[in-house]
Image (tube, rainbow, N blue to C red):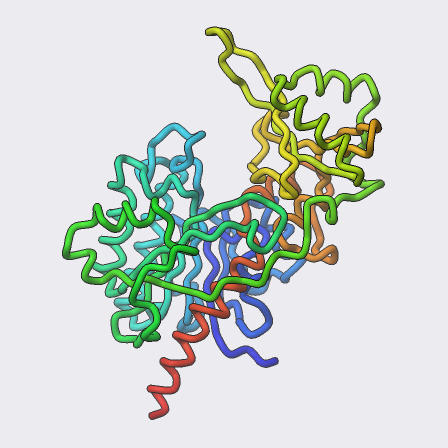
Length: 379
């Protein structure tokens, strides 16, 4: 299949948006400031179109071609519930603004992308009481785009709970399929509905209710991606597993007991979290056995690295989730080359975008819009 469409990938990390777009898309330019991620990107995709530098140091003249799509998974730390609440004013999530500056200059050069896709955490909708989401919509409008947003949980495609917000803008000169005119409850959550209602009328006028078909039922469960003999981590000793179980509340221990009675091997994802009990801080291990992993997060110490608990009758084993398992939870093939160091691999995958989610967006939103555009151009 030849390359039909072109794209820029900002905040590229290991190139997971590129993996999701697929073989029909040609990368014209990619960027990330993290040298470790850049090394992994080069190992998997080559470095011909990749620039490792702070986005603030880039300039559109060094970005080749005229892209159909500009993808921007800008940093989430200042927008997430775990962050400091700085929002788009923060040093990290605030890199949204130099991204927009590049889009503005591309417009002035006559090379503006037909589609802009932004990906981030759900906290973007409510950051600063909705002011940050409103600023994103206002900025897209000023750049000459109509826009809309969808929430897609990776659990629709992969055994990982990972809901993410995608704000998608298309050039006002492009046509959109007629179906994209009303809300769809699969993709438009109550949070999106509230965020839309809070927008001023001048922004609602340019809103698009993006819609897509529901994906086929997920066939893969968490247990299906588990390695028996992982290279990057080791199974805990019995004493370590006992210590982990001792950190569980009665509610979570009851989940383990239920898993023991299931009659089949069960795998649960475990996170250590600090809870207040009777006014005292207590570190608890919390487990889920709902066939999906908890959301992968960038490791900032042991408490944010997910563990697994494998239960086979009365036999219980535990360990850190392996680097390859985290890659599988993001939809990356086993042929994808990961960093050798465990924390680097976890950081790469925890910061990424789920590959099949990007493919679904490309197949059902980006490509139909671009194909319709080309039909009209030929006509």
